Image (cartoon, rainbow over all chains, first blue to last red; front, side, top):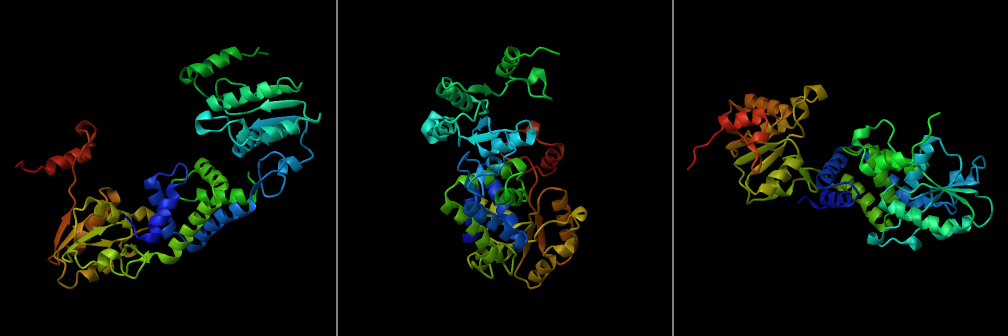
Length: 198
Length: 198
C-alpha cells in the first residue's frame, strides 16, 4: 500500500514476534518521524547484536565472549547446575537472587509438533558436563507447561541412573494470587506439594 | 541485566511505541536467534526509510520523491481536498476507494496538553493551497476524538468565511457493530445524522 521504503519497513517489522500489521505500521511511522540519531542507534543495535553476541561454549547462555560471565565467575557454586530452556530463563532466575550455582541452557524444549526432539537441544553437552564429579545436584527448571514437563521427564529418564541428585522447581499457587482464580492443575499441585508450617 | 549488546538492543526496542519491556526482550531474542540476512534486511529497512523517505512538498504525505504519487496523479480530482491528521489516515481512506480527490496532511491535531497548537500543524500551507480557485470542497477528515474535533472546529473558523464548501465525515454507528454496545455520544450522533430511507 505504501511507497517502497515505508512498506519494506512495515513488512520487516511485521515479521517480528508479537508485532501485528497495525503495530508494524505504527512503529514504522514512529521511525519515520523520530530523530535520525536515535534510529541509527536502533539499526546499529540490531547489527551489533548479530555481530557480537554468541552463545557461551559451556552453558549456551548468550555471551559476548567465548564463555559467559556466569561460567567465568569463580564465586559461583560449581556443584549446583540449573537446567533451563532459554537465556531469558537464566535472567529471570538471576533476578530472584535465590540461586548461586551455574546454568545449562537447553535452547528450547521437546516439542514433537514443532519437530524439536532431544537431539535439537543441548542435552549431549549437558551429559558431558555431568561426566566429571563436580556437579552434585541438577535443578530442572524447564517451563511448567506440556513441553517443559516432557523435557523434564526426558531428562529424568536420562539422568535418573547416574547418581546425581535431580530436583524440579516447586509447583503451586503464585504468591500474591487468588486461590479461587487458580486453575485446577495448579491447585491440585499446591495440595500435593503442601509443606508443614513451622 | 543482560550483557552489553543484548541490553542495548532491548533498550532501543523498548523506546518504540507499544513495545513494553517484556516484548522488547522477546523481540531482541528473536533477532539474536534469527537468520543474519533477515536481520540485516531489518536494519537496512530502518536506515533506508530515514535516508529516502521525506514528506511531500505539497500535501505532506510520506513520499520518496519531492511530491507524492497522489499529488503527481493527474487523474485525481484537484477540486476536492481531504484534510487528515496523519499519512496513516491517507492510506486508510485510500483503502476504501471512496475518494478520488487530493489530500492535505496536517501532521497531527491540536492538543494543548501536548503543546501542539495550529502553528505546529501544516495549516498555513493549507491556506496557501486554497488561495487559487481550484479547490471547491474541503473534506475535514480529522479523527472523531477530542483533539480531532478541536482541529476541525479551528479549521471551520479559519475557512468558514472564504467561500469554499466545508464538509466533515459522518459520525454514526459502525457498520457491523451492535447498537446496544455503541457509546452514548455515537448513538446520539447517529440519531442527529439520520438519513431518509429510499
